Length: 327
Image (tube, rainbow, N blue to C red; front, side, top):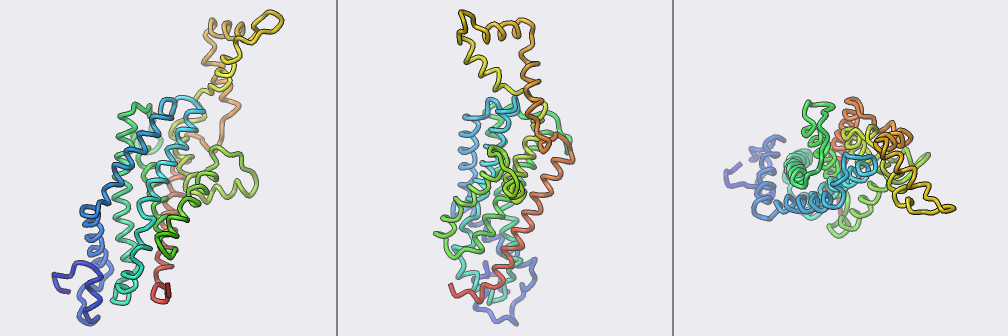
């Protein structure tokens, strides 16, 4: 192939028997070069400051109690999952459907669909890694109290970074798969909110789900990201503060000239039993799926990796038939 050929779009005018770069590896490098030029010259880098803004807003709202008590940890890790899913979806929701005509021409000219998707996977991994670094940096800047106990790698921050990256990347690959299936960018942007709602409703974090609905949570990226975050945050050993806060709101309630709630709270505080009371409350709200163990975290990571592979394979499968596409 001539040194002047910069993308697969240039290949279509070259007879197939004259092509030098027929190998999948060489095609990956060609298309990867195009994607990184788009990162620099077509402002794809904007996803990084956007990730910083989103992380900053979430930390401002829920960061104070994250990894400090049960309620704050569940809410905060749910928000962290939302950050990852939002970032991943916006990375790739339009990248394939907006160039279907180009893909069709280049495929007929000799492009391997697997090379095309592999190039996108490498590039999207680069974006997700950048977003992971930005998100963690913003969280540290906002004084989020991350756990110090590592369950897997020996570094709690590295454990957290892996969870953020895999959750973001799995969401990204889901979005890439969607972009390979839908007909247009308009359809992609219409479908995306429904995918996000499905992920968040069936994350298993806030809504009480039973039976079939509970089983559906296993099919969501959000469920495994949220579970890994809670396990790493030692959710089951944290205090539960809801009861104490409720009692504090009721301490001025009068009953037959007395203030029974205030009296009880004063006795508990004087004996130094406030923390013990919150820990006792927590025992009745522990969740086995948030067990703080290496096996639990590794299982979540494995599930996310399987999602990544599955979504990529489905994207390849749909694009392999692009020559028959009449759209």
